[in-house]
Length: 355
Image (cartoon, rainbow, N blue to C red; front, side):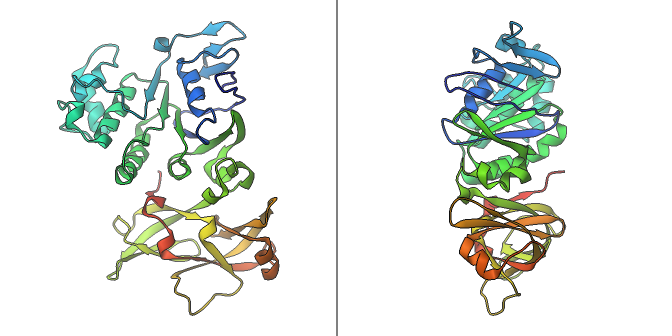
């Protein structure tokens, strides 16, 4: 939990449970990094409170301010911040209370850098350097792990691999994790919960699904980011370059998706890419027609509405005009079909399911 005044005044109050990953999302300059620095002790606000595992790290009302080195925090920066003259193992050992090479190698193996312990940063790729930074953060045996735009400096393909590895790594993490990002796709794939910040003020705090279905919250990031995460399972890879996924509402055909049949996935479907039809349409080039019913229609201040389509215990969102909604006469409970073009789902909008 934190309330603070900082270079940008903050009005934020949230809680992160052990083993949970919370994403702080907002535009540049919204106060995300300032908040992270306040938790780590790199910035001391005039007023505020940070409590980790029942221990106050900061309580300005009680006169408590732990120095950064006394806070068991692991911090991963976007620019890696590795010592160039040290090997990967030495960088990890530098964060330990007592240097232990065997433990450093174990942590490097945990982030899939087995066999690279003796390489220096210049001999590693950007993605590998970022994994060293994660291993170094874990070497402190932190009570909280803070990730500050950790994947922004790598290319998209590397970022996708790192996302998958963070999802796998989370099975080994028992501390709360706070991720700062401006990438809503990244937050939606990785986070259990999200806090949306705009100009230092908390706009929304909730589960990822709740926040991503909240048009008011997403105005802070742009409504074009409105999307739903649909669970799916790889069914088969077809000869024409498509993969058939089994999903609520019907099959999804997407350009080749990595994974053997049976692999569980989460597919991010953008609301502005969904077309609705009352009856199942015929003679369309679109391959994906998912059956569901209208759960609710959310109206905003502009000409658009958001239609929540329920299917198999999950929802897909459609952002359409108020006029289109009126013409279709959409009401809660009405059957409806959601049409999604195969090519509208980007490769980095597909991720392995979290356990």
